[in-house]
Length: 165
Image (tube, rainbow, N blue to C red; front, side):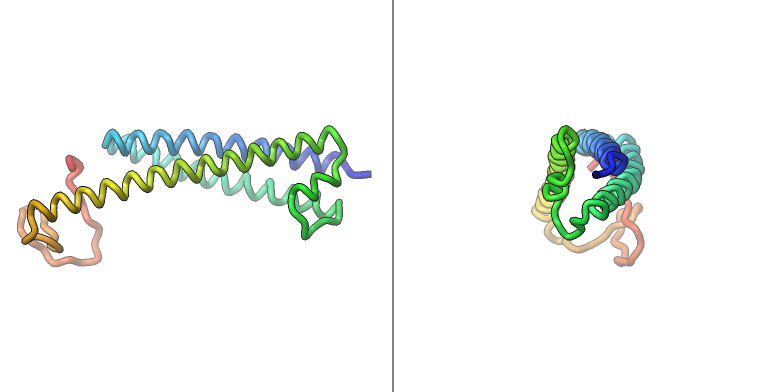
């Protein structure tokens, strides 16, 4: 008989990971809005929150993977997928596990989508701004200017951009 302790541990770990992913998606939405609004202080704070959430997500994912590995070891289906593992579990826990797995996959896809949308927006803005500046000032292409307005040699130091752009 399959121990319900392992199943319960996996259910709890999956619920925690889903909650963490949903919080991460909300953080990504706040990041995207701050980026669109060009609100740099809020953008920085949302980046800090996202960094914390990503560390939390990594630890929660590790717990879930460990619980899944323990259940796979007990059911002796180490090399098989999640749905094969779920077949080894009795009802109603099987339905609960498969529902949670679907919710986990959807939450992960939402996080990937939000991340991609923010990246596409930032890349599009960068390309458009670069094209406008190159069109307006073609003679200054490839030059970097210091705070005094004079050209400076390009180095490996960080660039500071005017936040009004």
